[in-house]
Image 1: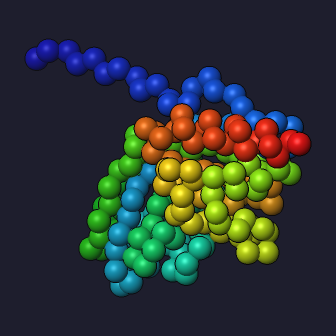
Image 2 (image 1 turned 90 degrees about the vertical axis):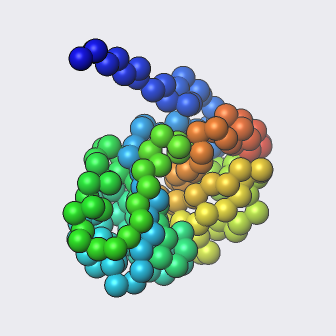
Length: 184
């Protein structure tokens, strides 16, 4: 049998730096992710298997440690594990009928933090990100310039911007411009 060589995958935003003192941009560490779809009767079993309660209300998320479940639509979630756990195996152990697709290598994320984080993101996203309407834990699938993103507010002045790796240079560049504007 021939030996197999597996090339390590380079993070799409490796070495990128950006932002301003008002809005700092940090490429997120690699994470495992699944796109999950299931009917209401599977939510309890999947939640138990994944170790995080799948939210069932719009614009909400739930976290358990470094694992996050983001509600994207009725019966649809993005589950992110920042420690790289095998989410596919966890979902498969649920004993429920569902659809899970590993999107770990499709997606990447940028952490936007600082008092100007909202302004930086709003340079390309029309959504009202005020704390009153988009509180900590809020999430949504939305647009940023010409790219689809999934936005999660993790703290008062911190957001996780999930995007497809092919759009990540565009997203990072536009966020950099927004961060510069936030600093003025």
